[in-house]
Amino acid sequence: MSKHQALMKRCEQRLEELSKQTAIKSTSLEKRLEDSGISRREFMQWSAVTATALSLPLQFAPMVAQAAELADRVPLIWLHMAECTGCSESLIRTDTPNIDTLLFDHISLEYHETLMAAAGWQAEENLEHAMEAYKGQYLLAVEGAIPTANGGHFLTVGCKGHTGVEIIEETAANAAAIVAVGTCAAFGGVQAAAPNPTGAKGINKVINQPVVNLGGCPPSEKNIVGTIMYFIMFGHLPPLDMYDRPKWAYGARVHDNCERRGRFDAGEFVETFGDHGAKEGYCLYKVGCKGPYAYNNCPTERFNHHTSWPVLAGHGCIGCSEPDFWDTMADFEKPLGRRELHSLDKTADYIGGALLGATAVGITAHAVAGIFAKNIEEVEE
Ligand code: FSX
Ligand code: SF4
Ligand code: F3S
Image (cartoon, rainbow, N blue to C red):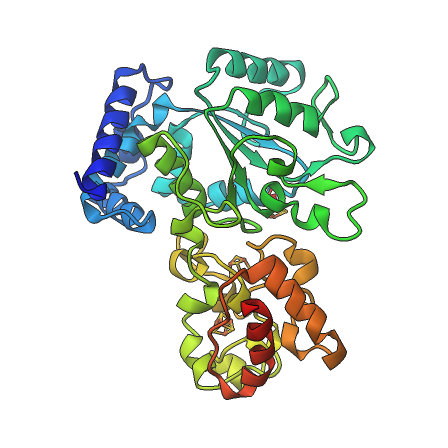
């Protein structure tokens, strides 16, 4: 049996198992789509696009559709730790719900502090009930970093005053899979920026279980929903990169798929915001774009229903999907390589150690070739 056939078989078995389970929600996805004016044809198109985004062959499109319909069999517990809630906003804050946001309604969302109506003791009981009723079955999504200093007391949540560390340890213990939504939950994010007084950490530094990291501050709705879809389809986490991010979403650099890449290769750069080059859509490298160091699918998947992404909006990428980006990518509006010469070695160490691993920066523009040659040497060593 080929790998492709084996994967299809695994997906079919998983979907068959799910279809035998009772739906936790009473409204079908079909009804939700109908109520929102989304046709079956549009739904099938979405399934094909989602299969492609997940790096699956197109033959998987009908299974994506079936998995979306069966999402009401999968309980989801979504926790908020130290963060800004931008990750939830990325997914839900929209005028017209699309299929990604509808799917978030359809999945059995048992607990979500921003969205649920319950508060206080009632909320606490809902969480305890969901953890008990769906022991070993629920998908746990966590948004935000975990403060660990001072016994974890920089963050307490709920009327019982449990610390973030305690809540994560307890909820993770019986989760079927754990998703760190956003750079804060994955790597600590801005909360962990130097000198990190609260000892903020990504969740995989707090618990000893596999965690899929969705880098991005915030990650796109596609990366959140796609990861949930993958879990529904296969019952386990997707293939991951060196920072435990799904390869289907974080396998290429922002720079590799950027629509301004031709400008970069031609040596056409914005020199200052608002200049002639900015109006013409020149490359933003010289005003600090960190697309050459960031791994994410922002140029292809975009944000807000595929409307835009940072570079299209006119600002460089700040590398928000990378560990420690707050410290390693600053200044956000200056290139790393344009710092004072005496700091170049340090910069290259940062890039080599924290960001690029063994992958060299493939850069051809004459204007910056010298600066990057130094970085590439360091990276390849
Ligand atoms: Fe962090 Fe998510 Fe940035 Fe905000 O909660 S990844 S600060 S967009 O919202 O965690
Ligand atoms: Fe795009 Fe930034 Fe790369 Fe320029 S440096 S091509 S703006 S990602
Ligand atoms: Fe973040 Fe850069 Fe994408 S800033 S949103 S990784 S373009």
